[in-house]
Image 1: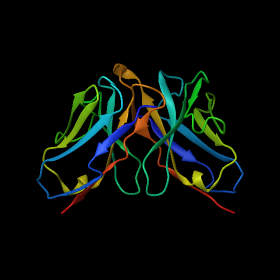
Image 2: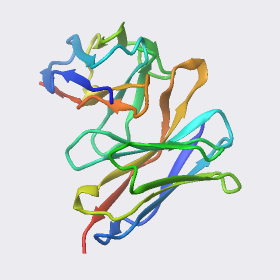
Image 3: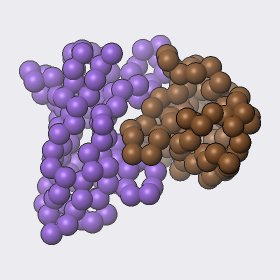
Image 4: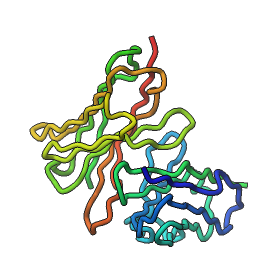
Length: 107
Length: 121
């Protein structure tokens, strides 16, 4: 199985801050990397696929980058509604595997 | 846009069988997508359970493979999860999802609402 490691596990930032979450794969996955947002009590929501492609309907303050083993999710200007846990997922191989999640809190 | 509606019991007896269904609306299940089950234990992250194609071909997480079956019913446009010999460790929120394969980059673009399943007597 391909291990996915996110950092940090949690962070606290103010509205308007730039927030960066990193994800590292245990082996190269090209750009087969997805990012999901999960709000409390809700199903996950796809934000970004293919490492950097924004899913339809997702605000442009979200962006993704990276290839190979190292990836980044950036929120350019944090909003109150971005309070959530964020997960990366590799879609290079089966079984699909997720990172452990990064909980984003608002100061 | 495809919508997924989950159904099934929220309480299962230890050593029993967990059974959930996911009904697909707004599109046919017989398309070039995989249909997925994922679970999330309380306070923890997401675990991939397995996937099924409309042909019936399925892949499972090796950690669950001996106990899990995912099947598809094309006539009813739904897919199902069965997990045998459950224990308290199987207590989780279970989600169904669609893995879209368009553009060649698989991703889960539609999700069910989630079902809290508790294993307890």
